[in-house]
Image (cartoon, rainbow, N blue to C red; front, side):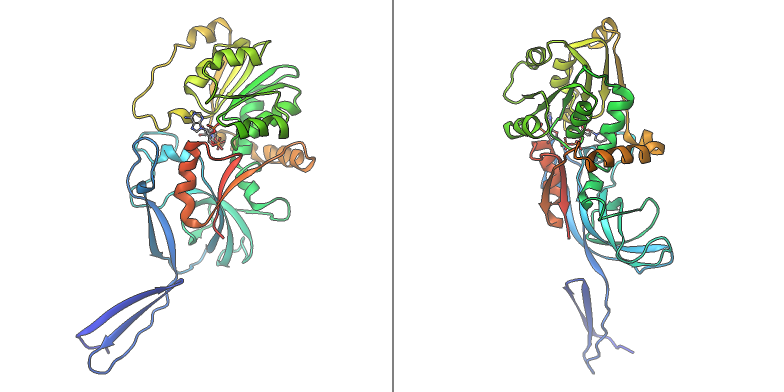
Length: 367
Ligand code: NDP
């Protein structure tokens, strides 16, 4: 038995903490081996564009593996614009992140130890995971993915949530017809590049809007968009859309909202379909901007405007996955990622979404 007084010293080496209790009289040692890992929590809520100070990295102990649980080591995390909404307290379709708790996001991880029948060591799984390098979690919502079918990051992009968003939003709500003009904003991002290419597959004329010349070149030269407009150098979006769409706009896939969308909606045709997928230009707004009233335009052009959340289509995900995988397999859908390397880069990568630093899907490779 240890007798007081004693000194307690603690040392973290890789994932092992050695705690040594030194008894003054007879120097006894106790060694506890614990699994430790890094975790990134929401420290405080962003005001405007998120900054590094909104996040905090901690070293935490990982609990023991119990029945029905798996130990995971993360391979790649996805950072997504919708996560900005969860960082505020405002009511939405998902609960806000709690302060001091880890950020949760899409990730692909490898099972390194399993106490659950359906998962074996070595499997790669996709799920909503806490921002940690390693973790012990229950298996609810985890899905095994095949690294031989596609690169693992594709399950976070074209074969995952963004690809499915493009597929169902465009085809189910937009219903593009051959020869129609489809405009997509946020065109060079994870969702946008898929929307434009699916519209091309359906025989449409495709116009993309993005914020950087390299993105414009990529959309036209690599993905076959008919026209791409740089909204940062173009001062008159409505005029640029009118010039790019001589027959008007039949389908508008809206990823950004704000003034860009005001400009596009002013150019819609009779019977146009407007898909409200995202409003990234407003996610960091500290006051609600007032734009033009678009209802008269919607009414006069007998247009449809519909918002959606990709999870509305959960029961049809297998259909979307199959179609996307076939197009990718046939080389009809191209895809690209912007990859940050290292767990610590997660906040920087997330912030980069609002600075337009990504072409295609933004991911963070952890291991
Ligand atoms: P992206 O990969 O497109 O990344 C975000 C991009 O948005 C940036 O690269 C930047 O490109 C652009 N952007 C950033 N700030 C602004 C701004 N103020 N005005 C205009 N463009 C801006 O993200 P995703 O493809 O993952 O998501 C696209 C949209 O779809 C988001 O709004 C997202 O919230 C939404 N979404 C909705 C889903 C749903 O279920 N409804 C599911 C998934 C995504 P640029 O250089 O062109 O400015």
